[in-house]
Image (cartoon, rainbow, N blue to C red):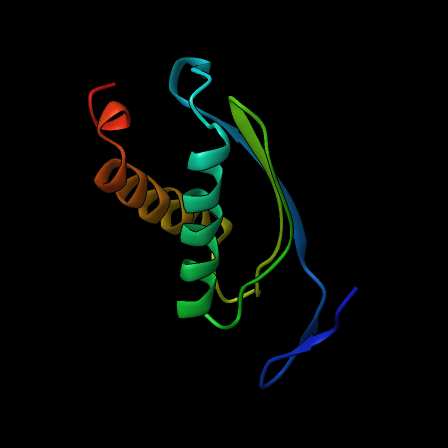
Amino acid sequence: MRTQNLSHCVYQHQYHLVWGTKYRRKFLKEYVKADLTESFFGTVKRHPTLHIFTLNVDNDHLHLQIEIPPDMPVCEVVQLLKQNSSRALKKRFAFIRRM
């Protein structure tokens, strides 16, 4: 595990997040997975204190192991990731927009 430093603390916070698609629809195909992972890593690139260790995507859910600093709430990070990935996928794929 990585040890990270802030101005007055040292931390090792890793979270294993799992979430599914709406109604567990199986639309995360190979061509959608590429854009989804690109969206996640783009979000992490804009927030340099975040770090993705592993990202596994199945047809109807995903597993994400991420490091989140103590000054960012976990719910805010999940909101950022879901918001940006949803926006990117709906912009690119019309069938997701119609669901």
